[in-house]
Length: 267
Image 1 (cartoon, rainbow, N blue to C red):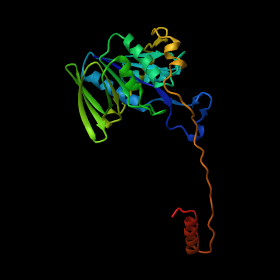
Image 2 (image 1 turned 90 degrees about the horizontal axis):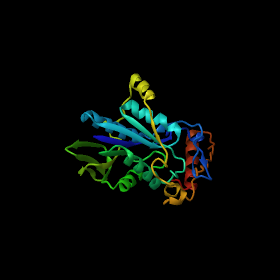
Image 3 (image 1 turned 180 degrees about the horizontal axis):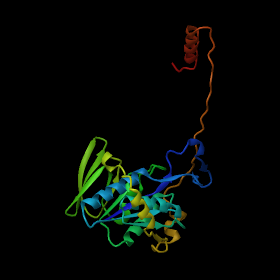
Image 4 (image 1 turned 135 degrees about the vertical axis):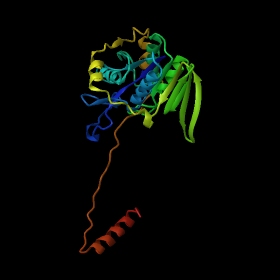
């Protein structure tokens, strides 16, 4: 079984708020030299892929990302977890801020692989939280898609997927190939690679493709192909005001505080 996992590097969610900045012209977060991590939901998808590989001997896991050269760190992390090969698609000429364009490039990269039976993505990315790429990727590939899956099993060419719904869980069966977006269930927690696996992952070669290698043109993946327009992006400004309640005793301060809160219509 050939399993493909799409991953993405994002700004570290633990980044202090004071270090977070926005480029008002490009309408995106400024990365500069800030720490990047693999999107946590994507790591859940890698874990599920490796678990399926272990359950089905002879299976192969390929991870793909559309990103700058620095994203090789994320690919190597996936390799250290048990993926077999990694593909880095250069974003030159790609307007990757639009999920439909991202899905188009990833679909073309997946189609270039030597066959695939299952495509996994995280349920959403931790930067924009739109959760669209997996669904749009299925549309580009012409495959069925099951979103919000905490777990799945493969048997005789059919995926049995447990799907989260507002009412609870639904169990869905779909023939392969298919696309499934993975959530962060407890049994999908990413494993911690051993030092040996990390060192071996650093020695594995990475496959690098450009949009030209994928047979795509700037008109297909550039700004003119956008389907989403970001009108504005800004950091909310917070106003803080502090008042000190004076008083000779605690009871007097308490009374004045209550009076002030009533004036402000807080209570």
